[in-house]
Image (cartoon, rainbow, N blue to C red):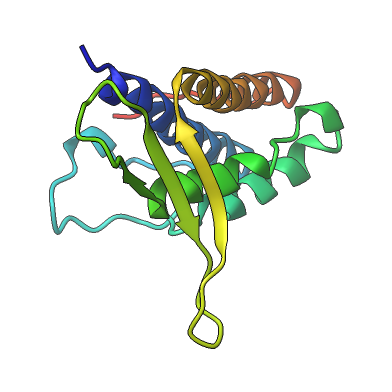
Amino acid sequence: MDDTPFKLGKIVSNLQALECILRMILKNANGEVTLTKYYNLKVNDEVIEDSFTNYDTLSQLIRKYNSLVSVVDRTLCISDEVVFFRDVIAHGRVFSMNPNPLNPYLLLKFDKPVNGKVKVTYSEEMNSDWYEKNNELTYKQLEVVIDGAKALNLKAFGPIE
């Protein structure tokens, strides 16, 4: 049985959790208090912009978090590698030349065109080693952020209602 969706799902879940935790830490660090009950929000509801609701990219969130935590311990900074990898997942092309689901996929990412040509910026076979390596990369960043929040005496998780 092909467990590609499960393995890829773990990595995507780690990336989404990383962004959410960063937002909660920054909200706490900025002293932002809200009465918004996030779990009750519906389409077209309007809420106050804060670190949880703003439009910051993962790169911006990491930069803000790193500037906070680097004062305490530079080893608790998040690697920029995770941003590049998130972009590969979000904007890459996944395909296989063989329709057998047990064969590994290829993940390609291309740069913006220049003079009608594009450069390949990422090309890797999504085999067992790839899934293991990238699950470890993304999970490690979650651990680093949680340790960073502790070092800053901030809550990574607060009540989200």
